[in-house]
Length: 185
Image 1 (tube, one colour):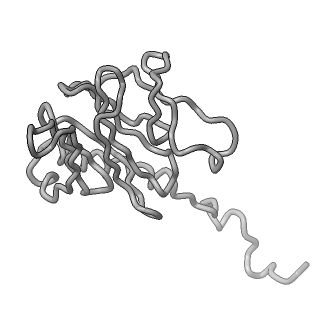
Image 2: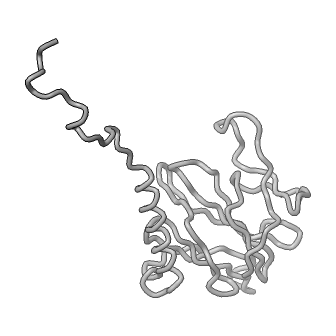
């Protein structure tokens, strides 16, 4: 798989809660005639079966992803989704493991593998996307370890930036009246 650019989804007018579930897909700025779930293309890959896109609804605290396999004419071959109501599946990182498999990093140490499965003559006549949890990725895959470390650093930096001291630090001896003056006003 090769990470690419070129796909985008048309924006929707009006308030977020009025938007439809799908968006029109564009490739290099031109309409493709295909509608995909979501509002944002999070990642896109060229693979031997066509194109693999990861989309989201860009909904804070209820993030989810849709995975769509497209052929060369931008027709949907297979799809899968990851998300849960009131759950957060914010995609932190992703990388190919081989020609048919992506590693997906969510939360601190939650990893999934997304595998493109090609048709098999008698058993399966269509492409499929198989999504499964990978419990050991952050232990066995050096890229997963690096991704976890990068996420930890990012969260620590955000936390440090968010800590506010509501009381300014001053030398109290310079600004307070001595106790003998208390109550003399």
